Amino acid sequence: MKADVLSDVRRAVRLTGAMYFDVELSVPWVAEAPPSREIAGIVMPGAQRVMEYHLIARGTGWGHAVGQEPIRLGEGDLIVFPQGDAHVLSSAPGMRGTSDLSMFARPSTPLPLFYESGGGGAEHTRIVCCFLGCDERPYNPLLGALPRMIHLPAARPDAKAGWLGTLMNMAAAESGSARPGAENVRERLSELVFVETIRRYIETLAPAETGWLAGLRDPVVGQALASLHGAPRESWTVEGLARNVGVSRSVLAERFTAMVGQPPMQYLALWRMQLASRLLIEGGQVAAVSAAAGYGSEAAFSRAFKKLVGQAPAAWRRGERPDRHPV
Image 1: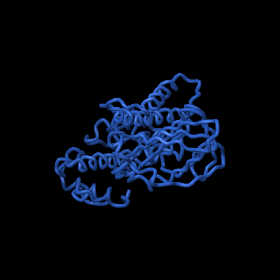
Image 2 (image 1 turned 45 degrees about the vertical axis):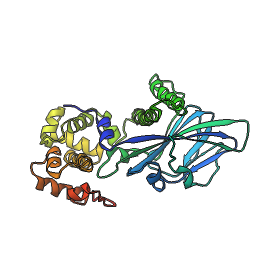
Image 3 (image 1 turned 180 degrees about the horizontal axis):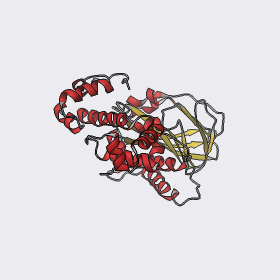
Image 4 (image 1 turned 180 degrees about the vertical axis):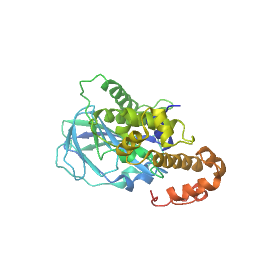
């Protein structure tokens, strides 16, 4: 069984979205966001990692992660900060603001929060801001494969730009909707825009690029990842996986390690721990989770979980989380 690996990871790391702000700005204006770790517990309670992206629904501006050079943003552009960097959006390059944590407090009314701000000039910019929460422990291969910033311009010559543009137009339109179910629609749209952004980002990677995302499009590594994700409980060996992909053991091991950064069986062990951790959080009993993760005995699973995650499965199930895992 072959799997859609990106969709599988999205489900397993519990990606959730929220359309949080809809801001109308008049020049001159500047908005500075703190590192996402400082607001994660406020904007996305329960999420281990929070990412932020912004849609320029109308007008223009500039954006950058703190410490990087500003880039010009046009109407319809999308800018994403996958690593949770502090960042700045402004009407002109070089501007800086101050972070006000109080503005991130979740209201009792449905999201998004509407703001008007700026210097009162004639030129206006509208920005829709979204947050995405996900698990980063025990193992999220997507996070480490993403850069500090992704910029997707609206004006692209290729036909594939249409789907992302349609999603972003829907997100902007739904931002002010008061129809029944509107908030749920906005949540799903924020997730869909992010997933489509990742798909578009993969298309921009250079042929010589390495990493988990580049591996998804590689004919050998992509097949191997799909096989592992499609049947994670199977008793895989490198030899068996190589036969399934149609290459030699040495070719698979070398190419997979060079591309993903770890051997196939180590990747499988880590991915099994991610699947198991989710089942434990959802209340699964250790014995049942061990079988679902592909382990022949509860004892073997417990040893592997403690080695790779840093604590016993029962402790993880109770909600205890180490600050970092040993992998």
